[in-house]
Image 1 (cartoon, helix red, strand yellow):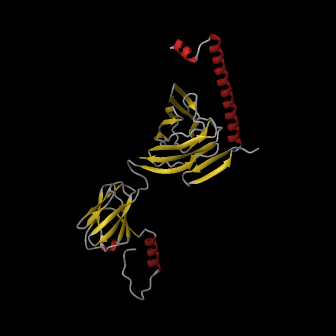
Image 2 (cartoon, rainbow over the protein chains, first blue to last red):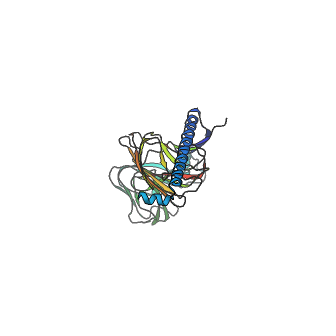
Length: 69
Length: 277
């Protein structure tokens, strides 16, 4: 499996290296992917719950904001 | 070597050739001074270095040099060395004062006039900015490593940033512990973070190209204090983020890493790092 590429620019030597992630970096990358997927699912669930509640109450987002202001 | 008058049939010695080579490489015969000095004719084509903790002068008089002669001058000392017109005229488009590690050369246009051409110092002693690196953002992460520790502060300019999907720019460093406050449509306080996440609370930069933005990092190279930073970033059509905080470590900051939530791929952009004194 091809791992993502990262770039390292050594300012002292001006050398630029593009290389595949090593195992540690790739493990962190996969962890980040998992965390992002969870966050995305939570945000979508929250948005759906909010929309469902508004529909149940029969009011719009603006009207809900007015109630809470 | 100092300016010479060669004669037909003269045989040059190895020492003379070495000195000529040095001059050809814009060095010139070294002539170290430790006190204020008045140039003499033999200084033509030579390189004078001044080293004194107090202020000094290099005085330029007439009738010693010919048009086309040059004299290189470098100030190694903490005291400012000022090129001073004695009986000659000395003009410059910059300054006649050389701070420590600054240098320049006198370019004589006649026997009585010279232009002082001042070069950039190795590092600005006070004030001024030096561009240290320009890096194109690429891959899933881009790291600028071995950042010079010779300056007081860093200014980081990011231009034309964009990702391939909907990610948020994250900035981290070799110091893994940061605390920051982010203000946008809500105030977010985060402590002990491994990176600074720059979204407005919901929406990241995504694949929209951002406006240029800056990040300042103060006392980044000291080993006796935390490293404070501030960032201002505008993006998309109506998003703006301000963030400030610090890296909680006395270690010197030597690298910066840019990612898109640690998962996205850069679609473009560049990072310019300036050293500021």
